Length: 257
Image 1 (spheres, rainbow, N blue to C red):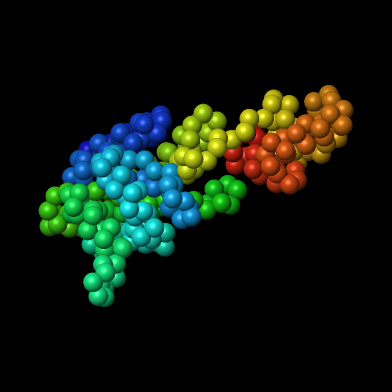
Image 2 (image 1 turned 180 degrees about the vertical axis):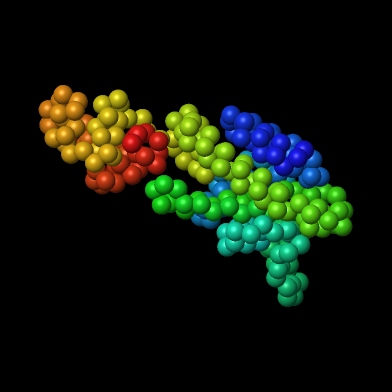
Protein backbone atom coordinates (compact mmCIF):
# COMPACT_ATOMS: atom_id res chain seq x y z
CA UNK A 1 0.00 0.00 0.00
CA UNK A 2 1.39 3.39 -0.97
CA UNK A 3 1.83 6.06 1.69
CA UNK A 4 -0.88 8.29 0.23
CA UNK A 5 -3.29 5.32 0.14
CA UNK A 6 -2.49 4.43 3.75
CA UNK A 7 -3.20 7.97 4.90
CA UNK A 8 -6.43 8.03 2.89
CA UNK A 9 -7.60 4.82 4.59
CA UNK A 10 -6.82 6.28 8.01
CA UNK A 11 -8.61 9.54 7.31
CA UNK A 12 -11.73 7.67 6.16
CA UNK A 13 -11.91 5.58 9.36
CA UNK A 14 -15.08 6.37 11.31
CA UNK A 15 -14.44 4.69 14.66
CA UNK A 16 -11.69 3.16 16.77
CA UNK A 17 -12.42 -0.32 15.42
CA UNK A 18 -11.93 0.98 11.88
CA UNK A 19 -8.67 2.61 12.92
CA UNK A 20 -7.38 -0.53 14.60
CA UNK A 21 -8.18 -2.69 11.57
CA UNK A 22 -6.78 -0.20 9.08
CA UNK A 23 -3.49 0.23 10.95
CA UNK A 24 -3.11 -3.54 11.23
CA UNK A 25 -3.56 -3.93 7.48
CA UNK A 26 -1.15 -1.09 6.73
CA UNK A 27 1.68 -2.39 8.91
CA UNK A 28 1.20 -5.93 7.61
CA UNK A 29 2.02 -4.58 4.16
CA UNK A 30 5.36 -3.48 5.63
CA UNK A 31 5.94 -6.93 7.12
CA UNK A 32 4.90 -6.42 10.75
CA UNK A 33 2.80 -9.03 12.53
CA UNK A 34 0.71 -6.81 14.81
CA UNK A 35 0.76 -3.65 16.89
CA UNK A 36 -0.02 -2.35 20.38
CA UNK A 37 -1.00 1.22 21.27
CA UNK A 38 -0.65 2.26 24.92
CA UNK A 39 -1.38 5.39 26.92
CA UNK A 40 2.08 6.30 28.22
CA UNK A 41 1.05 9.35 30.22
CA UNK A 42 -0.19 7.52 33.33
CA UNK A 43 2.75 5.60 34.84
CA UNK A 44 0.88 5.26 38.14
CA UNK A 45 -1.78 3.02 36.55
CA UNK A 46 -1.45 -0.76 36.52
CA UNK A 47 -3.66 -0.97 33.42
CA UNK A 48 -3.67 2.20 31.31
CA UNK A 49 -5.73 2.39 28.15
CA UNK A 50 -4.46 0.15 25.36
CA UNK A 51 -5.61 -1.26 22.05
CA UNK A 52 -4.07 -3.20 19.21
CA UNK A 53 -3.88 -6.49 17.36
CA UNK A 54 -1.15 -8.12 19.46
CA UNK A 55 -1.60 -11.78 20.53
CA UNK A 56 -3.86 -12.15 23.56
CA UNK A 57 -1.30 -14.49 25.14
CA UNK A 58 1.31 -11.72 25.02
CA UNK A 59 -1.16 -9.30 26.59
CA UNK A 60 -1.79 -11.74 29.45
CA UNK A 61 1.93 -12.29 30.00
CA UNK A 62 2.61 -8.54 29.91
CA UNK A 63 -0.05 -7.86 32.54
CA UNK A 64 0.59 -10.88 34.76
CA UNK A 65 4.31 -10.10 34.97
CA UNK A 66 3.65 -6.39 35.50
CA UNK A 67 5.96 -5.61 32.58
CA UNK A 68 4.46 -2.14 32.30
CA UNK A 69 6.61 -1.17 35.31
CA UNK A 70 9.86 -2.28 33.69
CA UNK A 71 9.26 -2.04 29.93
CA UNK A 72 12.43 -0.31 28.66
CA UNK A 73 10.76 0.72 25.38
CA UNK A 74 7.90 2.41 27.23
CA UNK A 75 10.33 4.22 29.53
CA UNK A 76 12.26 5.54 26.54
CA UNK A 77 9.07 6.49 24.67
CA UNK A 78 8.13 8.80 27.55
CA UNK A 79 11.39 10.73 27.09
CA UNK A 80 11.63 11.16 23.32
CA UNK A 81 9.70 12.17 20.23
CA UNK A 82 11.87 10.11 17.90
CA UNK A 83 10.83 6.58 16.87
CA UNK A 84 13.29 3.81 17.66
CA UNK A 85 13.73 0.05 17.45
CA UNK A 86 14.02 -2.44 20.28
CA UNK A 87 17.59 -3.21 19.28
CA UNK A 88 18.45 0.43 20.05
CA UNK A 89 17.55 0.00 23.73
CA UNK A 90 20.35 0.16 26.29
CA UNK A 91 19.48 -2.70 28.61
CA UNK A 92 21.09 -2.90 32.06
CA UNK A 93 24.04 -5.22 32.57
CA UNK A 94 23.41 -8.32 34.59
CA UNK A 95 25.32 -8.33 37.87
CA UNK A 96 25.24 -11.64 39.68
CA UNK A 97 22.63 -14.30 39.09
CA UNK A 98 19.55 -12.12 39.14
CA UNK A 99 18.54 -10.97 35.66
CA UNK A 100 17.38 -7.32 35.47
CA UNK A 101 13.59 -7.03 35.01
CA UNK A 102 14.02 -5.02 31.80
CA UNK A 103 16.01 -7.88 30.31
CA UNK A 104 13.45 -10.43 31.49
CA UNK A 105 10.73 -8.46 29.74
CA UNK A 106 12.65 -8.47 26.46
CA UNK A 107 13.43 -12.17 26.92
CA UNK A 108 9.71 -12.84 27.25
CA UNK A 109 9.02 -10.90 24.05
CA UNK A 110 11.49 -13.12 22.20
CA UNK A 111 9.82 -16.23 23.63
CA UNK A 112 6.59 -15.04 22.01
CA UNK A 113 8.36 -14.84 18.67
CA UNK A 114 9.02 -11.10 18.53
CA UNK A 115 12.48 -10.59 17.06
CA UNK A 116 12.32 -6.79 17.12
CA UNK A 117 9.90 -3.91 17.41
CA UNK A 118 9.45 -0.44 15.97
CA UNK A 119 8.32 2.05 18.62
CA UNK A 120 6.60 5.35 17.83
CA UNK A 121 6.23 7.81 20.74
CA UNK A 122 3.66 10.59 20.47
CA UNK A 123 3.25 13.58 22.79
CA UNK A 124 0.83 16.46 22.44
CA UNK A 125 -0.83 19.20 24.46
CA UNK A 126 -4.61 19.52 24.21
CA UNK A 127 -6.60 22.75 24.12
CA UNK A 128 -6.76 22.85 27.91
CA UNK A 129 -2.99 22.54 28.22
CA UNK A 130 -2.94 18.94 29.44
CA UNK A 131 -0.12 16.80 28.05
CA UNK A 132 -0.92 13.38 26.60
CA UNK A 133 1.62 10.73 25.69
CA UNK A 134 1.34 7.41 23.92
CA UNK A 135 3.59 4.63 22.72
CA UNK A 136 2.89 2.38 19.76
CA UNK A 137 4.97 -0.69 18.99
CA UNK A 138 4.87 -2.61 15.71
CA UNK A 139 5.85 -6.22 16.40
CA UNK A 140 8.34 -7.92 14.06
CA UNK A 141 8.62 -11.72 13.83
CA UNK A 142 10.86 -12.11 10.77
CA UNK A 143 14.66 -12.04 10.62
CA UNK A 144 16.69 -9.24 12.17
CA UNK A 145 18.35 -8.44 8.85
CA UNK A 146 14.97 -7.93 7.16
CA UNK A 147 13.90 -5.63 9.97
CA UNK A 148 17.05 -3.54 9.77
CA UNK A 149 16.54 -3.10 6.03
CA UNK A 150 12.91 -2.07 6.53
CA UNK A 151 13.85 0.27 9.38
CA UNK A 152 16.44 2.03 7.25
CA UNK A 153 14.11 2.45 4.27
CA UNK A 154 10.66 3.02 5.76
CA UNK A 155 10.93 4.31 9.33
CA UNK A 156 9.96 7.85 8.31
CA UNK A 157 6.89 6.62 6.42
CA UNK A 158 5.78 4.61 9.45
CA UNK A 159 6.26 7.62 11.70
CA UNK A 160 4.14 9.79 9.41
CA UNK A 161 1.44 7.11 9.26
CA UNK A 162 1.23 7.06 13.06
CA UNK A 163 0.95 10.85 13.24
CA UNK A 164 -2.07 10.70 10.95
CA UNK A 165 -3.48 7.67 12.80
CA UNK A 166 -3.31 9.24 16.24
CA UNK A 167 -4.71 12.55 15.02
CA UNK A 168 -7.63 10.69 13.45
CA UNK A 169 -8.16 8.81 16.71
CA UNK A 170 -8.21 12.12 18.60
CA UNK A 171 -10.75 13.52 16.12
CA UNK A 172 -12.99 10.45 16.34
CA UNK A 173 -12.95 10.39 20.12
CA UNK A 174 -13.57 14.14 20.28
CA UNK A 175 -16.63 13.68 18.09
CA UNK A 176 -17.97 10.68 20.01
CA UNK A 177 -16.71 11.60 23.48
CA UNK A 178 -20.13 11.20 25.09
CA UNK A 179 -20.61 7.70 23.68
CA UNK A 180 -17.13 6.21 23.55
CA UNK A 181 -14.16 5.54 25.79
CA UNK A 182 -11.50 8.17 25.17
CA UNK A 183 -8.28 6.72 23.77
CA UNK A 184 -6.24 8.33 26.51
CA UNK A 185 -8.58 7.40 29.36
CA UNK A 186 -7.94 4.09 31.18
CA UNK A 187 -10.86 1.65 30.97
CA UNK A 188 -11.57 1.57 34.71
CA UNK A 189 -12.26 5.32 34.96
CA UNK A 190 -15.92 6.29 35.19
CA UNK A 191 -17.57 7.85 32.17
CA UNK A 192 -18.34 11.57 32.42
CA UNK A 193 -21.38 12.53 34.46
CA UNK A 194 -24.31 13.77 32.42
CA UNK A 195 -25.55 17.30 33.00
CA UNK A 196 -29.15 18.28 32.37
CA UNK A 197 -29.91 20.51 29.41
CA UNK A 198 -30.21 23.58 31.63
CA UNK A 199 -27.00 22.76 33.50
CA UNK A 200 -25.16 22.41 30.22
CA UNK A 201 -26.64 25.66 28.94
CA UNK A 202 -25.61 27.75 31.94
CA UNK A 203 -22.12 26.21 32.00
CA UNK A 204 -21.73 26.74 28.26
CA UNK A 205 -22.59 30.42 28.63
CA UNK A 206 -20.15 30.64 31.54
CA UNK A 207 -17.51 29.14 29.25
CA UNK A 208 -18.18 32.03 26.87
CA UNK A 209 -17.50 34.53 29.63
CA UNK A 210 -21.09 35.38 30.49
CA UNK A 211 -22.00 36.36 34.03
CA UNK A 212 -24.95 34.91 35.93
CA UNK A 213 -26.94 38.06 35.10
CA UNK A 214 -26.03 37.80 31.41
CA UNK A 215 -27.04 34.15 31.27
CA UNK A 216 -30.30 34.84 33.10
CA UNK A 217 -31.21 37.48 30.52
CA UNK A 218 -30.25 35.24 27.58
CA UNK A 219 -32.25 32.26 28.84
CA UNK A 220 -35.15 34.24 30.27
CA UNK A 221 -34.59 32.93 33.78
CA UNK A 222 -33.99 34.55 37.13
CA UNK A 223 -30.44 35.03 38.34
CA UNK A 224 -31.24 32.81 41.34
CA UNK A 225 -32.36 29.99 39.04
CA UNK A 226 -29.24 30.26 36.89
CA UNK A 227 -27.03 30.29 39.97
CA UNK A 228 -28.81 27.17 41.20
CA UNK A 229 -28.17 25.32 37.94
CA UNK A 230 -24.50 26.32 38.06
CA UNK A 231 -24.15 25.01 41.62
CA UNK A 232 -25.80 21.72 40.63
CA UNK A 233 -23.41 21.36 37.70
CA UNK A 234 -20.39 22.12 39.89
CA UNK A 235 -21.44 19.43 42.37
CA UNK A 236 -21.77 16.86 39.60
CA UNK A 237 -18.39 17.86 38.18
CA UNK A 238 -16.79 17.89 41.63
CA UNK A 239 -15.46 21.35 40.82
CA UNK A 240 -14.39 23.92 43.39
CA UNK A 241 -15.57 26.97 41.43
CA UNK A 242 -17.10 28.02 38.12
CA UNK A 243 -13.77 28.32 36.30
CA UNK A 244 -12.76 24.87 37.48
CA UNK A 245 -16.16 23.51 36.47
CA UNK A 246 -15.98 24.98 32.99
CA UNK A 247 -12.50 23.50 32.42
CA UNK A 248 -13.55 20.05 33.63
CA UNK A 249 -16.80 20.17 31.69
CA UNK A 250 -15.02 21.00 28.44
CA UNK A 251 -12.40 18.32 29.05
CA UNK A 252 -15.12 15.72 29.68
CA UNK A 253 -17.11 16.83 26.67
CA UNK A 254 -20.24 17.80 28.62
CA UNK A 255 -19.85 21.57 28.19
CA UNK A 256 -19.82 23.21 24.77
CA UNK A 257 -18.16 26.52 24.02
